[in-house]
Length: 450
Image 1 (cartoon, helix red, strand yellow):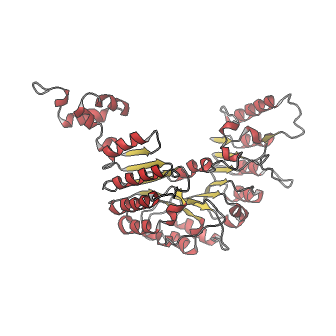
Image 2: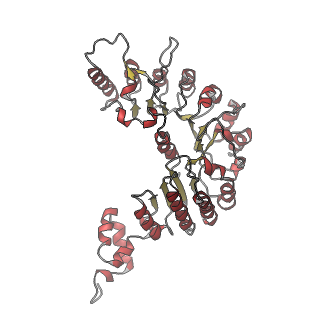
């Protein structure tokens, strides 16, 4: 150490080496040594990914981190309440700061809801800042618009900027939305058929409205000069008169042989009614989810278990309980969920909320597919048939059911308590976004693809 010096006199290269060896928690402790050591807490290599939480509790931390790290962070995840204009303003200001960062590679918007508060000019400022960060950036790899309908309607300029500045680099693009009213909405003209311009695109999410023959042809022609898609996420709301044919899907799969397809039906009774026409044998269906569609389609479930036995990995149904869970008829055949567990050898997750389940079928599912990592069924959705008259009371029956399923799965398993069920399942006036936004946004996180 230099004569007369102290800890603050250590050479920069030495301090950087010291901090690189410490855990994040120990870096915080070391940063309290002195002002100079505190500066080394905020070296770019220690903050490649930052989640900016703009809620009331998270705002002070996010503002501090944005002042220190917005100029060099590589991946920015922005969580905010889209129904609060103050947080939309904060998000706009943060995006403007990030626009000065030439190293930014990934932007993920994670709003609380699928819609924005449009009471003032905050949304307009937000969109302007979003355009600015896309325009000024040098090399975007990932962009997620967070399932918001209004951002989708304003995405034409975003798409133009992406094609102009980031076409060779972009790997992940998420434009899929959730509609406030799935029965009536305008379809924006955003030219998604130009998706072939992104030669390095691996992950794409969009609404079913945009799966036109032209777009399907574009996805099928990627084998000539583009890297194949690995993930395609499709949100179904309304359904047009003509769906992509099986031949179209076959060509898309031939061009993208490892592609996995996630199909999400959100507030889409029309999509559920047309599901038999949507499902095609050549689709590489990997994940199927339906939220608040008003019913279940046994025929479609049987098609899924037959056509996608080698691809399906998860199935989620969340429906409202109106006096009682949805009761479905098997038409004197085997239960569709039992058949799903039997046929689909790669099934890892099964979530059934708002659907009436016979306890015997639940036990059968666990025995047929003991490899399930996740089996979610609320206690309020399980029933016992008349022949199950051996139990003294309901608590005894529930405990016995949980024991049988746990024994089959080889791990401790419990029914989902009623208080863990999303409130929208029980109350029509509850915010339904809380039941599905986190799962849909999880589809849109940045995943490094090597």
